[in-house]
Image 1 (cartoon, one colour):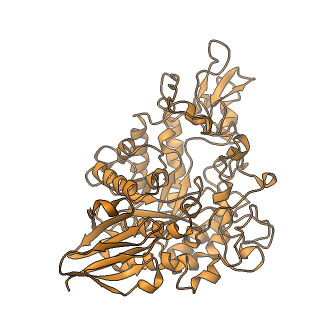
Image 2 (image 1 turned 60 degrees about the vertical axis):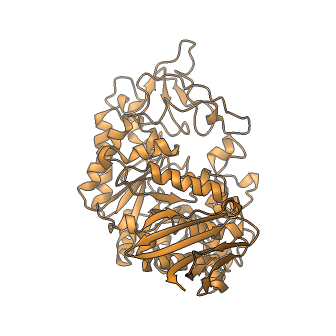
Image 3 (image 1 turned 45 degrees about the vertical axis):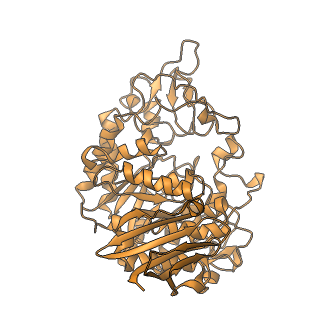
Length: 534
């Protein structure tokens, strides 16, 4: 596939619909609210929006427990609202990517209602049912990602059903061809309505071990970790047969032209890259979450990029992610100064970047009072909740930050009066302005969107604190130099060469011409155009 395909040259922006914009007064965002804010996304300069689930759901896991794969929950609007959103996004040249949740449905989905009705029901085998273990308990030791056993006994049928997440989210049996066909039909339903691709939830979970063997104990488990880490998940997910399932989904999308298939995969790099599939017939973009999991040091990040680039299959297109609805926000993890470095890193590395709504405002930690905890994982395992990264988008200094006319479903950041789009959009020193300029730089310079990548070797005294690399295309070379530390650095440029600062995370520096030495302030990153001998 050519490098000019949209999902290679573009940038993706994740919208968590509950938290983006409420068009009514119930404190929960909706599809009409997203449509109302499309001009902002076009102004910001992103190319595609990925929308987290809005399907009919009892909301046990806020939409990731789907009761109908081909509809819109009234909380978020109607199919007409969705069609209007797609039309208005496309009018602004924005692509629309949906969140597809095929690993599990809601217990209220008609398929599961039939499946649990009796053992002879034709849909019994659409889900994962097993007889009790020898002791009458669960069939094996598999745990739920949200705490507790992954098996729930159905008293009427005498068997257990498997759920990798909540008991309200029973796993579908993707070994059954009828399940595959039904899910492919759901994909086609949305493709026919004009969507440009899918992000597939927990794609590495879709196939389970055929023998349902116990997972081995994890020797590195520590008490402060989530309970799921007690065992190594070698039989409950990441089974080799899953690649055939993904290839089937990919084939459905290819019937509709340039559509993108993105897979959510939390695996080490050596396993992650296998999800590109045989001869690249798997996910177009197996999500790369390594920046979320790697220590925030220049040397560690540099080593990560080298490892990932080396592991990619021939023709495999890279991608990078700093945050999402399941992970603490980047500003909460590394602080406001380094959040700027993170922005420059994300938007200048080779591959497709995915931004998470609100990160362009530098949204930081939000304390959620116990009585306002909404996330089921946070209720099951206090301290591991995901509410802080799902708080409402902050648009202006008006009531509820312009998000809603009612009380927001989660609290705002403490500094919302000044940390909002209206206040920051005209501020040349704001992180929002930095994001917008970085996105503009990607559009203006092919080296940043489709160019090659090369790490720049640094002297040992700089390498732990500074990460430098080059992006090159059609003879143009841009060098990115990022100071991960709190002390200034001075790095030599090649003899006789000069660099023009196209962009700095410190706004007063942009436009400067550097000769001989590149001096970086603490927590500063720059994009240089190497102009040749001075």
